[in-house]
Image (cartoon, rainbow, N blue to C red; front, side, top):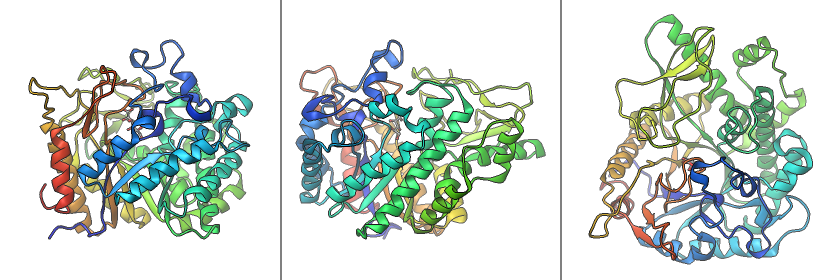
Length: 472
Ligand code: GCO
């Protein structure tokens, strides 16, 4: 007997821009990523998602592979501009038809569809018209789009993820300037993040008003942290890290508020707060009815005190050259330092399975809601050996340890709905191109038919699912 409930959702995840391709097929409109990835020097080696894995045309083959792997669930995102080419207005029936075909095929194969409404591919029209997430108009337009999806697919889709990693796309887009629209402005970061929280809240409430039978939440990228020493300064740094980072992101969605100490910090920096009192009523109302917390877990951080003349936000390792990640932080508060106790991936991401257990237990204590692990996985340079096999034992080790951590968290009282690995097939990494691979299925991006080859981890995960977590 394992700790996993017999309805536990064993699955894998993806996102539209990273797999679909078919960039202009069947009436699809342009997204900010369709534009951004074609600007000189914006992505690693100039890669873009025009074709990606061509999942749009090959979804039948991909679902057949999911069936073969025995997936119980598959998480994917809807491309807003397939449904509404201009973000609002006329619905593109061919977009609706595509997702209907996909959803129906999944269900026919006993695979539960988990649908993400927003995985970063904002309609370019809305960016041009009113600067997208910078305007409160987006809250209205997003909710209208979400309702169209609920109406079209809500009879069959039982799990909805409203936002995917709003903390990442606003941070990368408005502070680090490496995702669209490429800005460096903390006030805009706070404002756009707040608009995602409002869009989430209105959408959750709209879903509940429609009376559909299903569960709804959002997925936050969650990086739990430790203080590097037990000194008062480092522990203070840890508290700042949580209040400005994870609790800022999660409280707004799951409590309907922001941590006071972080508001004080921003105010002391003369950064304008983006919210009105009435916003919190909506956010709180949604927090009361939201069904689960989605988390994307990849790593933990180790945090130390950062003097006032210390390091600021630095760029990160996008090349896969181990050891190139610089320290990064907020002067006067905290910085992230290398954790001497654990291994790192080629992209300098800390490999810390027990951090997942620890993080889940923290979330349970703070929010007491069911949790869905909507992403967890290892990006690596996989290679095909001379006999054609992909022996990704390192991925198996990584996933095994993280699934064990899930079991331990369940033993500690965490209500875990499911575990989605990132990703099912290899796909396009936003900033790292096609060489950073995450999938159970290798995609030969050099071959004209984008050949799919199941890796060793594919067969391993099949056994894990078949035995409900017994055969790890
Ligand atoms: C990457 C990232 C992504 C994300 C995912 C976030 O390498 O581009 O790891 O693939 O994990 O899109 O939700």
